[in-house]
Length: 263
Image 1 (tube, one colour):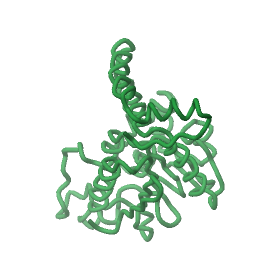
Image 2: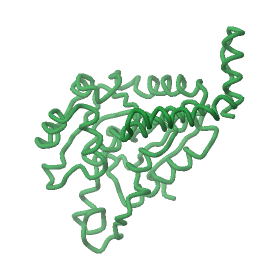
Image 3: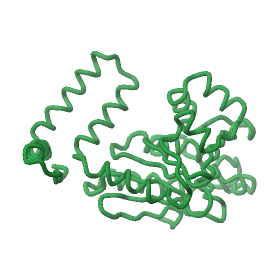
Image 4: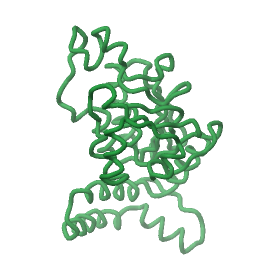
């Protein structure tokens, strides 16, 4: 594994940092693989209760590395570089969608193209004041290839998504807040502190219940109501037998903070 995706685990929070600051964290072939592996590792780690995704330097992610592609060595080059696997089940946007651990994007600077799709694929987004989402796909002769056509209409509605994607528009942090694409906008120097505070708040809750809630929300996107209620009930039964459920009830009665173990 390369150093293009850094991982730090601390107090139940894993922070994944896209680490090609000299290229504004543009996505390379190796970065794709590394990010997927890191996400899967964090999701399997019972001590990790929330994942923060951010970028090194002054930008979140400039999208696919067009310099590499032009040189014939990058994703989408069609040249002599590494072959692109069309099996997308282990690609970062798909992995982001499937992991049960909550994910928070700390949007530092611009997120363009593939980077925008990665940001949208997280459960929660907090933007620094310099944060931007750039739907530059149609300006480059492509379409949102990494989940954007699925995510954006669900987040902002068909008409707004159409306007953003068809025009290739760049949205400021305040634009994103108004559209509901980010949860909060904070000053750039407070971005990681505020993101960590939210991650800590999530991590303080029962991790089995949080994961089950995320899983049911994801399933609910494609289920009828009656089917969904049935599946929620099936998720609820194991939670009733968990030690965390007993701790949650006992701490409530004793008027103290719960100490959840994820069991």
